[in-house]
Structure formats: structure tokens, C-alpha cells
Amino acid sequence: MLIFLIYERKGETFIPPDKFFAVFEDEIPTGKKIPVKAIFEFTSVALWKRQENKEVGVTVLKKTISREDYSPRVDATLANNTLKPISNIEVVAIVYGEDANSLGFSRTFIDKLNKEESQDVSFTWPEPFTSNAVKIEIIPRVYGKK
Image 1: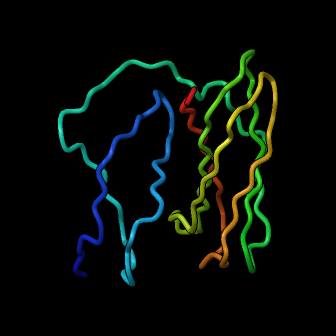
Image 2: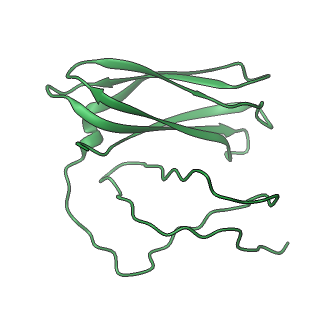
């Protein structure tokens, strides 16, 4: 099988310490081509900075999937277990199939979670997935003050 470059996007991101994380890129123009894989690479010397792990206080209390047959929906509850507010939280949902490949991913944002507060978030897809969902990951990423 031949593999061709469909699109290239350059930018910056941050990698939280000791944490599984997601890089969500939307609106990538593919035309009628079907992407097979994505590759991430450092195009220059990486600048490493020591940071506190802001995600430590954000936990996922529950996650469920429903409506798999016609318009899948993932619902999750996130909580701030710290004694101060946490702002600007990106939340990514990844749904995996039986072959461990992702069936779908989506994201939303929480503007602010006050101390010891929880909030429900939802993710939806317009079409059913191509196979049964067997695993859901909810990945919060704290950007901090805007």
C-alpha cells in the first residue's frame, strides 16, 4: 500500500509530566482521502521546561457511552479535588474499538471548575461507529488562566 501525505500542520503543544495526553487537531482538510495514520515529530530542538502537573487535581468520576446504534454519545463527570479553582480545561474523549484503534474522538472545554466542584460533559458523533466500542478514555488538559 502506498502512503501519501494528505496534510501537514505545524504548531506548538505542551506535554504534561507523568501523564497520558491527547493532541486534538480539528478541521484538517483531507478532501476525499481517508487518513491512515498521523505522525508527530520535533522539527527543531525541543525546549523543555519544568512545570507543575496542573491536571493532578482533575479527576474523571464516571464515563458512559449510549446510543451506539445511531448517534453515539459519551457522558463524563469531571471533578476538581483541589482547594482552588482550575480554569481553561480541555477535555478529550477517545472511543476505542475491539482492535484497539480509535473509532472516534471529540473535545470540549470547561471554562472553570471551582474547588471541590464537579461538572458533566458530553461528546456526540453524528453517525454510528464502524464497530463496537470497548474502551473510553477521557483526557483532561489544563491550560490555566487565559
